[in-house]
Length: 110
Image (cartoon, rainbow, N blue to C red; front, side, top):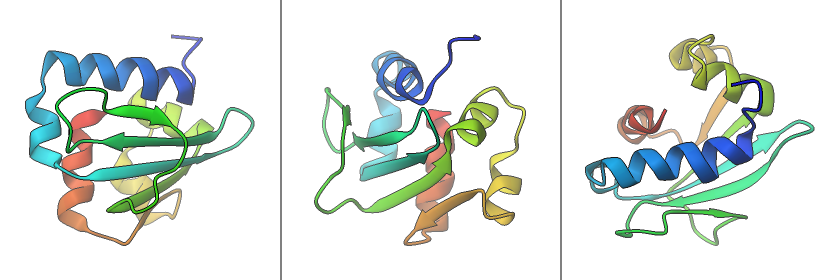
């Protein structure tokens, strides 16, 4: 897991998880943009309204939500070293607009 990067999380782990359980995408049913800061950061879009091809690099013109987090904190969340609820409360994990129901559904991806 030493090679875990935001790119591998979005383009490999998320895709694998969605391929194994497409119901996750159906449950979320929204376009989410992830803006990751830091040296390994970037932007990825998860279009969970589709039946495949969910994740792409780059931004989306009108996402339902934008999630912002640093590359280090994202990796800690995925490795279960940082509780996402605590990260959100401390401002390390931000949602715009804040939609608590949608934010909670995103937990299924991690």
